Length: 215
Image (spheres, rainbow, N blue to C red):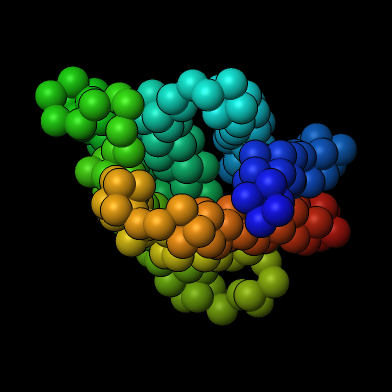
């Protein structure tokens, strides 16, 4: 019973929850900033990839190759969001450099170090660290402006922090957990991961609502 609920929660409910911020963003698209437009594009692609991953898992296919390419896309997409959000020449130079170098690292990793059919425990944690640091820098920059925490930029950055901070060690030890941990424990771990994904999407929805109400 627990396994069935887990499959529904992770495979259907949480991926479908991506539609919450997507629909809100599309309805209010003209009222949103370019940075939030980039976030919506990221969410739309994430939704399609999640659907494809769930379908592959349902048919017993290994969806790890999809995760490798999704990791590459996700980092580039989140950095593009921050490039537009910072709108600062110094930050832009750093972000563009990361957007160029990181995909190369991903290709080198799955070409020479980690198979496309196992968890990318080198590049996924690196992605998380980059996004965590970028989000912290962005929040610090917003703090200098002495703006309210309810501003949409902070909701988005906080959403990224909640998810990637909570998932960092899971990214590092995914292969260890996959091969050495009992099935019930793995189900609990992946349920927790899915819950943090859901929380991130709720933060994004709150950000879109906040931005819409301010315009």
